[in-house]
Amino acid sequence: MNWLVLASLTALGFGVYNFFLKIAADKINPILATVVLTFTGAIVAGLAILVLRIVGLLPEIYWTRDGL
Image (cartoon, rainbow, N blue to C red):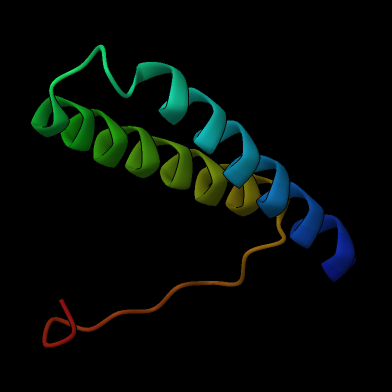
């Protein structure tokens, strides 16, 4: 995949994130917003890793017990 596509998707993601952040700024508790943002980011990252792994674009990930 071309790096320009990934950079464009990243910029689009930040734009959407900022848009919704501005809308919800006065309507939600800051602690709840942090929790929601953290879990949403973890879910999106997990799905991205899963899709890349299924498609075959992600190399084998090795880890050790000490690394975890």
